[in-house]
Every structure is written in structure tokens, then in C-alpha cells.
Image (tube, rainbow, N blue to C red; front, side, top):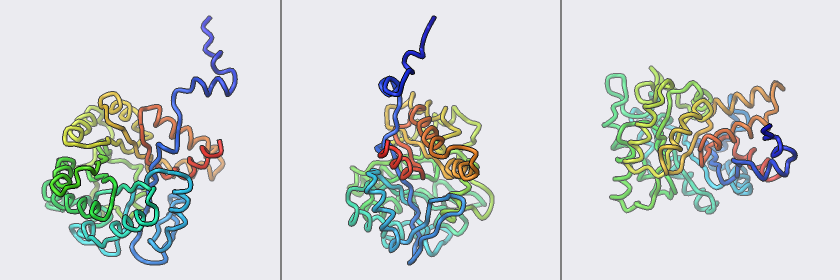
Length: 321
């Protein structure tokens, strides 16, 4: 008889043969920075997650640093929006100010910036609108301007999320031509048009005012196309390949891991976070255990890096374990 249970007899042997482990080193914590003063408001659909103005964010960053979470991913909510999202390349914009503040006061933190337009455009889409759709090629120059502004402010890495064709090549060329050849790109290589993003759109005021994003974000039904998207970004110069969302796309994470040698990231998105929080609040699940099991599934699928709103909670559990 085969007796696989021999290696499950107690916690010590289970630890010794454990194939995948979560570490604080795996985590990136998203932060929402709102332009203005005296702002610290919890996002109703994301319990525990808040929008901060820079004058109220110190305690949050103190905690992130104390927990030794290595990196933050910044999302900005500007005071003013327009058709092109021009605040994204304003050198004194909300994200640019946030980058400078963090790099000055928390030099140990690695600062990654989301590169997109949906939070900054009056229409809520991820680029320039022509004929009721995002004009891919008209948007690319604005992406380049946004990236250079972020990096001039001190960003350590840029993470373009808009799913415009040619984005990675545009960014790599802009960075290199400006002397920022050392700045890496974390590509949202495979980003699906997902219903799991709902709470994020509340958090970032980024819901589109018309239509949806299905003409540029991927169809959730497609698996082979995901490899095309990741392959193009790999060839264009992405340093890290991301899959978003994570939980319903573990097969895609595994496919990307198997196909490419570059680091693989995944985004444990707002809807995934909200479902666990809501079920735990109802008493239907053990929230902490489900949180840890969920993130471990992403590691097991092949992710090297997990962007998650649970980062602080996970870091505390790991610290106390």
C-alpha cells in the first residue's frame, strides 16, 4: 500500500516537505492617494482599505515599513479630470507628490506607480476617446509622458495597466531615450475585463461613464490569447509579467510561469478581497485562514509576486507564526 500520509503525521514533517510558502517578500501593497487635505476615508466595499491625502498617510506608511513589506503600488485620485487625463503627466500632480514624499521619508520602500488614465479622465476610460472607443495609438504618447513624469519624481518601477497595444515598447523606448534605462517595467501583461474590479472603481473613482472596457481588456473566456499578450510584452521589454485578476485565473498564472523565465506577478484584486471580507464578517468563513489559503494558491500556481490589499494582514500573520 502507498502511504503518503507518512509525511503528514505532524506539523514538523509537514513544514519540512512543504512545497510552497508565503513570505512578506512576495507582497506589494496598493495605496490610494487622493489630492487634497485631511482625507482619510475607508472604502465601503473594501473594509480596512482607505483613501489618503498625503498629510494623513504617515501612520499607514509607518505600518507598511514596520512590517517590512518591500513595495507599494500607487494609485492617484486627482482633484481635476479632463478628456485626456493630463494630470497624469503634471510634474506636481498627486502621484508625483506622493512619490517624492515616500522616497524622502521612507527610503527603504520600493515605489511602483500605476500607469493609466481611468482615474484621471472625465470619461473614465484608459486613454484618448475617438468614435466612442479608446484610440490606441493616440494614447501611447500620453503614456510615455506619464511614465517620464513618474520616474523624474523618483518612481522605482512603472506598471502600465491600460492594455494598449505597443505600450511596453513605447515605455521602454521613452525611458531609454531619457536616460532611465535602469527603470524596470511591470507589465499588466494579461489583464482581463473582469467583474472582480467593482470595488476598485469605487476606490479610485474610475468607473467609465459610458460603455465598458471590453475592447481593450481581455475576454475572460480566452486562454491562448493570454499567451499572445504576455509574449508581446516579453518581446517589447517587460521585466515582470503580471496576470490580473488572480483567483479566477490561476490557470493563466501557471501558463505564464511555464512559458516565460521572467518573474511573474499576479494582482489579488478588489473583488477577491471584498468577497473574503464580506463572508468573514458574516461568520461564514475563517477570514484569516481563507486569506492565507487564497494567496498560497497564487504562489502554488506560479506567482513570484502578489499585489494584494491583504498585504498588511498577511505580514502580521507571518510575523507572528
